[in-house]
Length: 126
Image 1 (cartoon, helix red, strand yellow):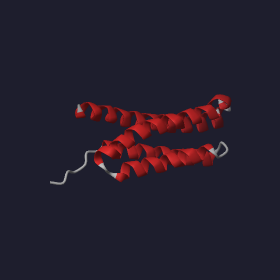
Image 2 (cartoon, rainbow, N blue to C red):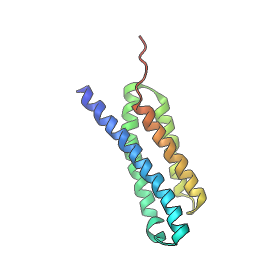
Image 3 (cartoon, helix red, strand yellow):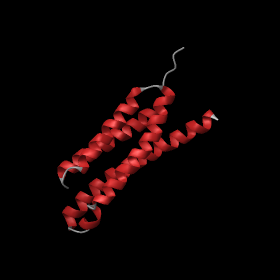
């Protein structure tokens, strides 16, 4: 049964990394598309996309990172991911532009790093 829970947590961590990657892709694509073509700004810059993305990242991180922290008692994945989520939340308070993109990308990288740390096997003392 423990293997089943581990497998679920690992899938959630991988999903968290995928969501973070999609967020980063969205940020970069938005800057490129809006700057180069002037198209899609109304859709790509919609606040709902950012709120839904952050909510999804929060849910996945809460379950996967929280579950991992309870299981392996390591603070690094939790602290790293929560710092990233804080950056992502701060980006929502900024007007659209370079500052928002920078905060979001920093947050996405930290959340991904937290999930990677959560996936990484840890040395057992023995």
